Length: 289
Image (cartoon, rainbow, N blue to C red; front, side, top):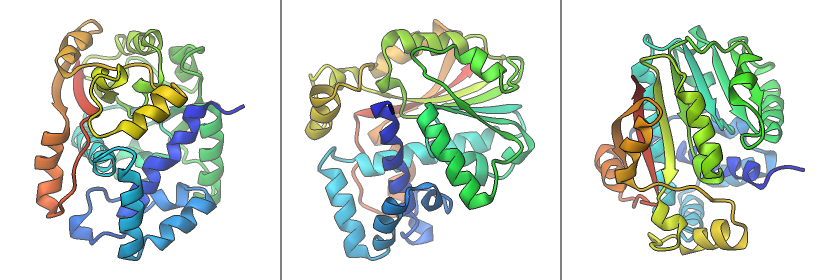
């Protein structure tokens, strides 16, 4: 039986695929592969979004679940892309923890020269393998698809079994995963990250702890009802001021942390588009000391 969290992998990539109908100069994320990784039924919806009224309708429906969530997902993906690209030539490997249907390993120039490990639930790994085989014919030789249950399996062993070496200076992506895990599982993953080579990079997202606790809604009441009340899939959260100390416990140092204001200034304003950005989720970049 598929874990309910596995089913959430499609939503962000639907937003990215829809974004490709925006004028190129105004796109937050450039990703021509996203559409091909979506299920056929979702592809039909995305094709309708080529017309502005349908695109606005899709955005509007999504925004009712959490004010600013559409732009927030685009901005976090753009930021991870930018940070990863800036690290090429320095890193020896890419490890994407909870890769979902992410396309970075297949579209970013320079990654073909290093090994990439995509870690996710067995259900998502099987679905991604099928879509890769259907779209590109096979999984690229430099990519390893690593199925794992983060709550029950040893991450280090799963990666080592696919050829990952801890001494490799690694870029770790941990996008939209931590909220689905228990604190014990988050700390277990950071225990693995504590053994990363010096100079490794990490970009991860987290949901604000006050939202998890139901203290502040940030315009995302329906999302709270879905993920905390009806089906409490979201478990773990942090507050922005807690992050540096949390990282230091595991030998990492925060480089920067971005939320609504930072994303608006860096990506939304230069695009010329008027889009709110949610504050329930934030993104952190860190370096291993």
